[in-house]
Structures are given as structure tokens and as C-alpha cells.
Length: 356
Image (spheres, rainbow, N blue to C red):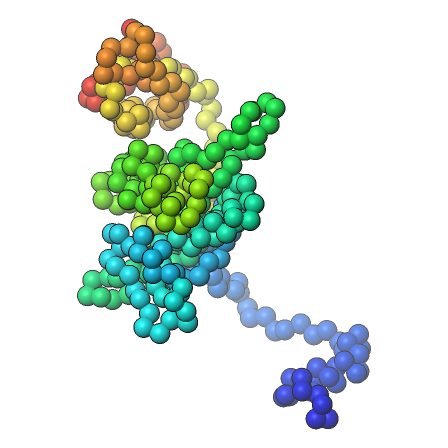
């Protein structure tokens, strides 16, 4: 080949050149041989989970961000609490990429700050990747994590809505629950508890747990000190999903949907209003009512939280809608009364009293 053809460096390049001169249309198409049987899937369960979560997050209006796995030491240290300390590189490519990220939120917050500084009004960012922790004995520990940052305006100002609406902790909770459900977590069994970390606002954040110790996610509004550390001057809601903590599903079905089998009989709904201590989390009451009669109670929804006239001091009124599903035959009045008494008794264990 002539010396000026620097793009030809081997046999495949020569073949490509011959085909170009001969004409691609003149080369017959020949199918590759196919082995007998059904080909085995090449994607691992972890890869399938990542694909599914990316699609779910994008479908919810979140924009994927790909940030560096390395961070400035100051920003990384802000999220190093409870993560076993930082991994610092001895020979980083720059001082701004000296620490391995202990969480995904620092990189997302830095990306949000750049966009906000350039006029971005409302940001919905997510990233799926690994955080790097110090394990026992100083060993490296990588954890698959999904981070979400909601910054700026949730909805712009308008004649019907008035001022622009900011994101709040409930927006973060909605994202956490939706993405955990997509990941296969048993969201009906989750408990909302505190201790989201010093990076979050203590009165507007929480964790989602299976039992008292297994933390699947933390969510809420970020603390003003965190926003100041990242030079952000608007409220920010954030989510971190710890995907490695989600228990694996048993059986070969995986994430296949069960066959749709609608019940033959119509469901029955009943409303209950309880007076409860003001410090009782509403989720505890919902969970108690749902577990009162698992054979008949299929859904429980909180629809009212009232504190004011007619409610004793130190109490609040929580109203729930309970959906009952009959099986082989419709309920009799006696059966409905017995179920209602079981629900009231289960709520009574938490100090709830049926409101008159």
C-alpha cells in the first residue's frame, strides 16, 4: 500500500479496501452459522437490573448524568460520614480528582451547581453507578447505588399556580419508592425511619428500611450546610438507593409479571378515622391496619391527617380507606363487622382510638 495511506495497518483494512473497490453490492450476504437450541442470555442479573432502572428513571422524567468516580477531597469528605473514610489516590491526575467517591450525590450536586449557574431552572438528575468505601481491614468495597437530585423549580410560575413550586421531601420519597419497586424491593414492607445522615435536613428527611437495620434508601431535603458546601442557593431534594441491600428474589420467575387474574367478586371499601398520639408516624398505623387481616385486607390508603378543633391536645386524627376483597362469596354484615373489629383492635395496640 502507498505510504500516504496511514489508515491501512493490517489485513482487515486491506479486505475493507478490496470490498470498497469491488463494490459492497456485489458481495453476497451469507448468514453466520447458528448453533442448535436457544441461545443463553448474555446479560447478568445485575446488568438487567441496571438497564431496567435506567429506563424507569428516564420514564419518570429524570435526566441521566455520568459524573466522575473521582472527586475533590473537600466535597468527598462532606459525604464520607458513616462510609468508613475516604480512598485517596497517591498519584491523582489532578487535585480535583483525588478522592474516590463515597456517594453519588456529590457528583450530582456538582453537576446541578454548574447547570444552575448557567440558568437552569429545574433539574431532575439521576446517576447509576458505584460508590467506593473502606471495608473491614482496609479492603476496597464497591456498592451499586442510584442517586437522584431534584433542584430548582418543580413547576414554573403561572397564572393558575402563582409562584414557581419547589421540590420537597415528598417528591424525593415518591422517586425512591417508584425506583425501589422497579428494582424488586418489597415496598409494602418498608418502614420510614429517621437518621438519613448529617447531609440531609433532620426534619425533612428519612430512610426506607427493611427492619431496623437494613437501609434500602435515604431521601429528603438536603441540609443548608450541604448546599453551602456545594455553592447551591436553591432548595434541593435528593435520593440515594442502596441497590446492594435489596434482598434477591427467590425462585426462577425473577421479574416476570404474574398472570393477571382479576377477582370474581367486587371489592368493598370501608373508612376508619382514628385518634392517635401526635408523634405516631402515619405509616405505622397504615402498616398495622394492613396486617390486621391479611386474608381480607388488600390495600390501605391514608387520606386525611387532621389536627385542630375537636381533636384533643397532643393527638391527631388519621383517616384511612381500607379495601377488602371477598374470595368465594360476598361478605355478610356479620363478617364485615368482625373484620372492622379486628382492624380497630390492631390499631388500638398503637394507642389509636376509633374517632366518634
